[in-house]
Image 1 (spheres, rainbow, N blue to C red):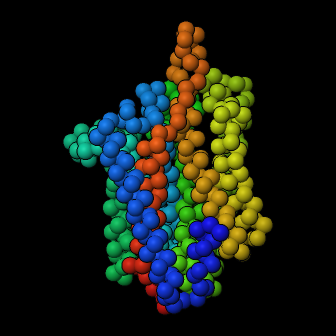
Image 2 (cartoon, rainbow, N blue to C red):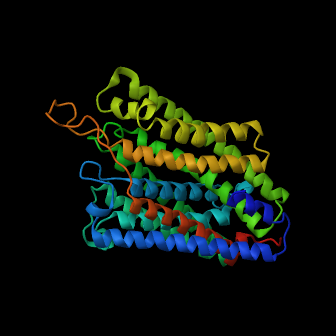
Length: 399
């Protein structure tokens, strides 16, 4: 029996703190804290020893798993903000029960993303200084840092106001966070889409794709964390929460179907005509070294299996949807990794017939990169559990 199974078997379905639950909570927090510290320590070592000695990236492939993990977290954060805003900002009652938890998790995931990318930037301390005194309005990366910083501030203020029951003010900051997050996220897509030297990324497709996939990620994440939270807290799902999670699942199915549509046409345009610069990376995904990542990770776990499970149970079985959310989170991580890495593997001068110039580049994450990535996920899980404890599961009603 694995760890998740032991969690679900120990926890009762209706309230009341038990010794088993307290022990499980303490052990889980301790394990996640240790893993987070290991990740942070590994990241600090990369800054001390130098990226050229510790990371698997190179001058030719400068973005690796730390960038894709950062993208994973900020995409999820924006998606959680979108999901929370449907209820909290726009007043859709079915989405109200998950709103507070979604706001909190949007903060946790954006901070987790910042934590990971802090160790990817070789001179991390320069980043906040450059944002203030070295700003460049023509730089998408400058806009990304600025907008995500504002987004995080708005979300933190919104969460504080929710805790103080100042809902009217919270709605205003929630709307500001939503608008800033969407602009920041479309700008993140533009960081990729405006790179004309990378044909695999280039085009207006990326900003739109990032927004749609963010909504999908937010739905998957809030269902996953809410289901785990209720089991950790030992609560039974009341009718209102069931309806809320079922509504989230229906929205998730719509977003998954939309991303599947985007992915299908990306495949078709990538192989049709074998256009140089776009064909080779797509071939790597479809039947090359990254085919397992693509077909098993992205397509099966990230899209087809979650969509099939949600539709097969008509978004009614919470356990089945929870399994779909697990598969979805794993698959979405593969999506971000493949997008970031495969888009760089075609050398810039590959079609110029240069002697001894590689046809395709390669990248393998180093152990330290893997440890930093693990630390980012552990950090996120740790503060998820602490949030459940210290904010009473983000619920106002008694359980």
